[in-house]
Image (cartoon, helix red, strand yellow):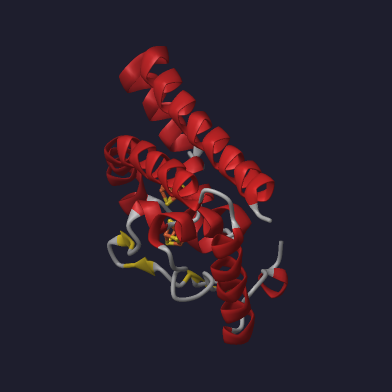
Length: 169
Ligand code: SF4
Ligand code: SF4
């Protein structure tokens, strides 16, 4: 996707998304169950945080092809549903990327957002250098553990979305 086709970039579009979630969560059957599901996902994200930070500390400071500059990243529907269920509000705006400068949350020390507030793709993506380190340092078991945790989070996010659409009336 190019920067110009990222959804909900303007303030007006963003506030419409917020209105959608506010109205839907009022109409949803058992919104408390969705909140609990989002809290479980947040706890799984916390479980992978230390290992992913360790991999970043090893590789990112010397990287010459920074993924947060190269890639166009945005909040998709699942990201927003998860964050709304967790916090009862959306982030302040869509992620913005500028060609050549990258994501607007990228600072001198890396990402300025807590992991739980990042688009999930930022947690999901392991670059080749990180994958190689996982294999060398931890062997297959650690690699499989981290990757299986990430897959579990991915499944739980999909389930949350399915439950939302089943319960919205
Ligand atoms: S995650 Fe990999 S590609 Fe991205 S900045 Fe770090 S080392 Fe570079
Ligand atoms: S939100 Fe953070 S991790 Fe994701 S692209 Fe932006 S700076 Fe990188």
